[in-house]
Image (tube, rainbow, N blue to C red; front, side, top):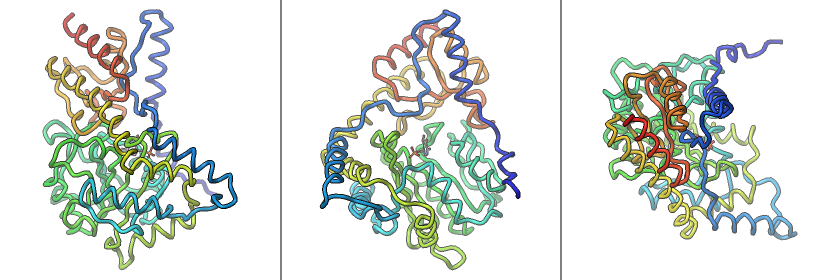
Length: 395
Ligand code: PLP
């Protein structure tokens, strides 16, 4: 018997447990009373009314002979795939076929599971700092990983270079953790690069609904040539507050072929073999969020978070602290003042302002010297946290 030894190569991450431990100790010391968490990576607004009504009515249906649903289609119910296709056409002008859309229990599972269809000898490129799932899932399979540095010089948006030899390329735009987002022209370069090399781009669009800038694409399929080189992952988690309900989707275009095989067919085979679909009530709730009333309601929640992001951005500008994000994303990536390291600045913010951030070093070596703030809190807490931060800076 052999275990998968690659698991021993996964770096332990103590990021969030260490944050929690430092906060616990600080509170236990009696030095502060009201800590404000500005590092929350989860949404906090309740799901919209339309989703609640859809969940209730689907549950009622399930209790009737006519409305009972057993196993659903592994790829997702047609009503939801059609609604997603319609949403793409409306919001980004992208035309998708329902059989290119695969509904799942969230983007994280799909981002990991998609690797089943790729050989282990492929070389992978990720950005640094990075959403850790891209790295760990490839370490588990023993793939070689190249890290592309994201820094102030490149606007936290690494671009392809002639000598980059990568078969699988992860792009997350708008980005977690930096909040930076690729423009159309920049994504075009990546798409051209992938097509010329035969690489596959895994495009994580989990934060597409936060985009404000006109020239930032919501979908990679707004870029010419993307249908022959990119798989897109998206989720209702941040768009509609579904982190606790679980629903996402992955798009594998029919035109994406490698080694003479349609990747769409491989993914279908993978899903029908290892996945039994998302529950009927959750898919009905997801559908409701993309329809007129639900969509208007979820946009209100996004606007709420974006208002918080604006308050934070204004504060950092006022303080003269360099930052990215906040405009097309719920994340703000802030350079620690006075050349402090991430954990040092984390401690200063905790002890002097009683504000909790997330140390950037937890997202990769290039994250050292930065902290991440998120917009997932109430207006009141955000305003209060920024007031306290201004006060420590003036001391
Ligand atoms: N992709 C990115 C960049 C994320 O930040 C997250 C969640 O934080 C996910 C994917 C996971 O989303 P889901 O809740 O759909 O699994």
